[in-house]
Image (tube, rainbow, N blue to C red; front, side, top):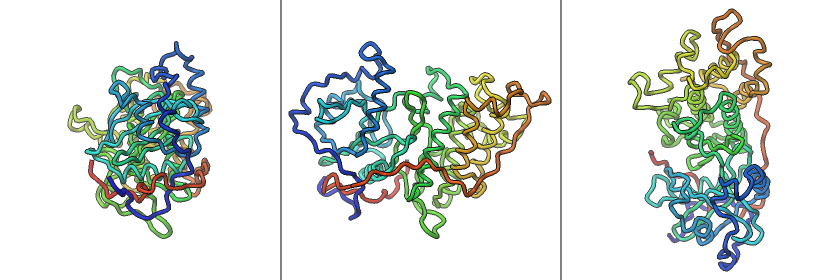
Length: 420
């Protein structure tokens, strides 16, 4: 591809391990990729716990060679495919000291840029820029990358339970319980809150169920930062950009004006929370015309005690307390406000969701039976007061000592947006 840098900027790739010789990479792996889900080869709980501990040791982003990534994916074999998206195809793999001396054993996901796809080199650079610098328990960890000739690849920690989208909408999967849905909502909210309150705020811009990945214990982690944008600075009120994202999740004011703010992410969070509550997709053309847009159909009912029960996912089977449902629905209602200033901050969203976790539910409503108010009928609860100056304090420092991984691959700014 020749020189693939877009701008002369300070690169954000940290000091990383240097590739070992090809002879090291050619060593046969002692671990088969099938071991990721085969309890007979390694006790699953022990394997997962070891993987989690080893992932913490990867504090710097590693430049991999194309040969190394071909090795761990068996030349990108079709039975190693985890999924496909706008960026390209994602494969499973396994890295350890047989690939390169000093690497700790870790299952990984390898994302390969489709050269003919909807995203390109600049989106690849955006992911490397943001995920190479940001670290948080609710962001997928970028383990490494490859920039070789015209090949662009990213290597992430492997997420054992896949995407939230698959768990919510695939008929073959076991339905997520109410408590698990609230755990996922809180984890995703913490991820967004961290981005919005970073030293240099980041607007995620593509928050949706397919970009929320789940670890073995249903810890939610945000993935796919190709459309992320640096937030407004100083006296700026918004960032102006071409409209990007996914139909059904993008905030209405952003779609109309191209003005992007952190409140745009809040709206998208409200859509996902509504999907968790209803078990319905944000847009579903198979439903009657009035029900195809989830927000248009459900939001008016979120504030109507007589209609609220009509929208809840019937698979939840009264697993919730009345108070918890009231608060969750009220939160979704405010997040989906047409007026961006009426939406809560993500730090406020985190505060509202924390009491809804299973260990705290009894404190919310110790004596009220499921779906019934104190008087026997459903009673709506108001959304808690916003503490508008509160900020989420779960910041994790970014790694230091960044340098360019490749003189031909200096990270540049986010791409000119493509519609997808």
